[in-house]
Amino acid sequence: MWTLEKLLLPGAALLAVRLEGRLTPLPRRGHQLPLPGLSPLTFPPLTSSSPEDPPSKVPPAHRHPLRKWPPPLTLQNKGNLSTEERFLLLGFSDWPSLQPVLFVLVLLCYLLTLMGNSALVLLAVREPRLHTPMYYFLCHLALVDTGFTTSVVPSLLANLRGRALRLERGGCLAQLCASLALGSAECVLLAVMALDRAAAVCRPLRYAGLTSPRLCHALAGAAWLGGLTNSAAQTALLAARPLCAPRRVDHFICELPALLQLACDGGGQDSTERQMFAARVFILLVPSAVILASYGGVARAVWGMRTRGSRRKAVGTCGSHLTAVCLFYGSAIYTYLQPAHNYNQRRGKFISLFYTVVTPALNPLIYTLRNKEVKGAAKRLLGGVGGGQDAQ
Image (tube, rainbow, N blue to C red; front, side, top):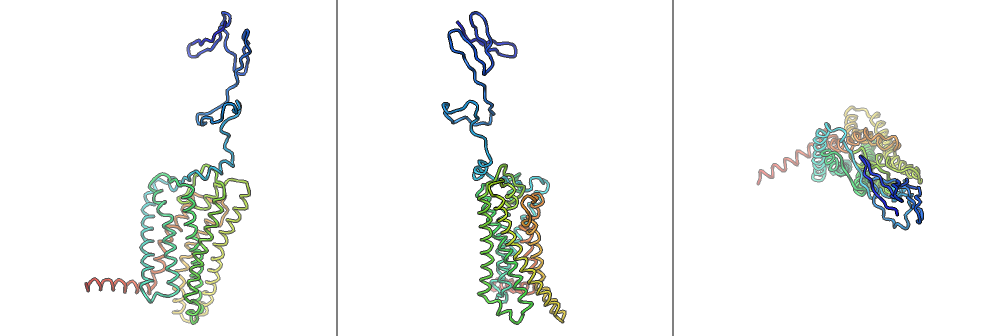
């Protein structure tokens, strides 16, 4: 006759078997206990488990005692799960003392961008003297700058008020698509404006014939279409790549170089990254070459002018645009024309802050600060509004 008994000892518990009047401790797991008249009892070894492991959903008949369930998360599983995960944008949470200052600065720049570009578009539409190709392209630049900043600033302000911002994968890709489309459109539009300046300085007598309204509409449409095409291609290529956890981005927006650092290795991903890099090179370097060629012609034309007044007028016509080009292209080329593994997110977010927030706020001032035509149009518009109120 045998029974199982549990003996309580100080600080421990001992499970034993009373077998024929003797207490026999149970053997370790994996050993056999011979019992009279019965088949040996076998105690299988325990499998390791952690508190985080979810309860098994595999039927006991199909469960292997040495196999863990669920299976470990492989690299391929990580890529599949990335479509359901969120991205954690750290923003400037590592600079807590700088966040209030940046919040005020970003808000002021955003308000200045909205008011300055809206006023510039209103003047160009209402004033007949500003119905020229130069101000037509300037209106498109104002619209691009307003949309570009709007695609970035709301999430940035929310980030600056808290520790970090979580975005769904769809929201992150939507923000990336919008900012890439508007930023790429600005790259092409600045090149179109350089061509317009070169035609005005180098061919002043034929300027009206060279810049017909139909050609201006076609060039502006090409700038918008080029931006949308580049953005759609880059976003589609990134969406097809698996992104591995942890999905922490040390940035305030879903910037393309920062997201590329989350991409998993293998599976032909190197060729995809080369294609994306080639697209960025094309959208940045081709407009840059057009701008350099245009201002090379302008420099030769200015060098051949005999009077100082003509030179001063030519420099004033091109100086504001050249300043805007240097501000935008300098930071954009640094951000996008480098391999993804060399991109420094900590430094890159400050550079991105400059060309996404500060430059669009400065553009209305750059183009109108020394522009007598815009100042005169503003005075006439304000005078007309004031005269109408006095008449009422």
